[in-house]
Length: 440
Image (spheres, rainbow, N blue to C red):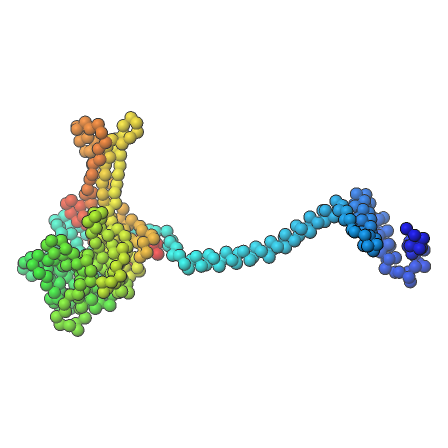
């Protein structure tokens, strides 16, 4: 370093600082603070050494820049630690702004997925069942229609009967004429009329029954060997849908106007099938078809003009509630191994099919077994074991059983809160009141 530069270097001493106050008061105040801190705080020798190296390198770099020589950076541990701390701070700042952004983006995608895909409804399902009425002498079972006034109208022993929701006040309302029998009944949405199917002389008659005088009004008659089945009112009360079944087993669904505008209405063919039921808005019907290839009953949806047929799922006897819930009968298979061999393989298997009532949302996403019948009884299992032992069968045997109890003919209440179900056994029929909730 030259003598000129040495002369430019000024060293301030605190003792003669009073003479220098006017020249550079800021440096004086800084030195004063530093001296006070040094007296109060012990010297950190390690930190002092780091600072010394830091300022030496900084000064050397500045001098090389001034002289036009290339800069050689010397990274001290202090600089490395400071660089890491700065990088961590930058990362934290990025995360601080990135996390809310990701939350917002995720919320948008979740909302879109909720809108685009139908989510399964709440699974808090509950049911309640009680017996309302039974008849040990009945051979044809029941056909029921539920009113909004707390009454159930049903066909029993060929006559029209009535009772309350709780199974009380059971009475016969109307007996058919001589040679006739009532088979099926459907209540109009307004509750003023009943559609009844009567049979006489090998033919079926579709009639309207006014509650004012209980006098049947003839609507349509079938040909010999044909029977009407499953009359169903449209929601506006202007149409009746029904199935026509021939003696060869052909099944067709028709509709007929009942608004009084045409004194002699003619049925209009809709499609093939049976057991029609209207959607709440009257634009669709659910019908039953039998698949001869698979041997199973199927449910199809079709427009009221017969177009746009869509397969819905397996089942029979569909009934559509005003809450867009579909009730239907469905066969379920019970399989139970009664005997195993020494290798743990089944030797005797009981295979039984039961027919139960199920309910489902219209999309078929959630299906619930509503009546849930049991499988083979202990008495049946003992009988099978005895027969198997008597035969001395050494190979696997599967006993195919048909359940002695089957549920059928579901019918919704007007508000869709409960159903009337027929339970058939080998000796009698029982009418059940079944309440179901939590599906929607």
